[in-house]
Image (cartoon, rainbow, N blue to C red):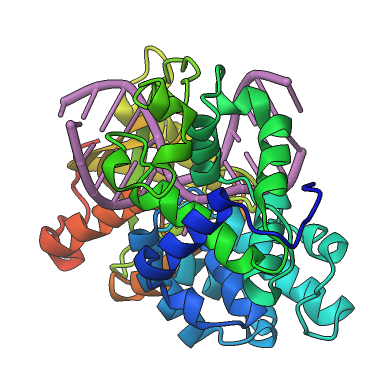
Length: 371
DNA sequence: CATCCGTGGCA
DNA sequence: TTGCCAAGGAT
């Protein structure tokens, strides 16, 4: 802590002055509602501002209060989050809203210990909410702040390996009484000037204070960690039709990858297995039904955070057995029109688009698909 | 403490 | 086309 926490250093003043004129005008900055700011902070985790803005607006129209969110069911919540990714954020936000409703009378807590105890809220998000909503002097250390501080200090190792040190600096730099603006200013600096590639040092309020710039190292800092190659998986996916022209979808288990989202059934193609074999095996294991595999619909390449997939999607005809949720949470027959009501992963949206643009169930051969 | 967890934009 | 990167948290 500085000896005089009320005094503003030239470093702090340069940033605050810059923010006053060059700071971004973002929707959540017009609000002091802790809930609205909370929603923005969760959506902004690992996600860029321009991606978040339309989701943020729609979310607050749909769930304007903590109570309305707490009262919603998980399918509604995930439908509003569909396409944003990292779906545990939505599940945790929903869960936390119910905790606030039950334990805090529906009012977002103002004590740090109570805030950080909520699921999905860590130290940075708690500090972000409490500083933005109530101007409380809690520091933050998100990706922007890590990069800005790494350059300011000419950090000689990856920020990940110096978290405690960077937290100390974030705390030490924070002017009490102006925590709201200062934290927002730090993030704006990282997002608009001190960018990952080609930082705009000529237009940076901290140029004169920046050690990386002084040493001409701003292009090499922050130092990167070496990344491991990611695996590629091949997945057989079944678009299963019944005689009523409906499609079979299942809901993924609540935990793990894409938890709680609906999908077209399928699974990993094992070594030495054809796609058709894989699909027949998977629907037997996961749903307890027999299908005939028909025409190829589409191949979809998709990259997740730690592996890549190719989905090989085939039309199928339901032959035998009542679908059961053996390897999933739920199963349902739905019409093509009803698919809109369910939250699907991005890669599955392309399947739906292909179905809408290409085949209509009435046009499919009813009984004599090649096996 | 390393790994898991989505998606879009960019060079 | 491919890899990197972005307002992190949970386990």
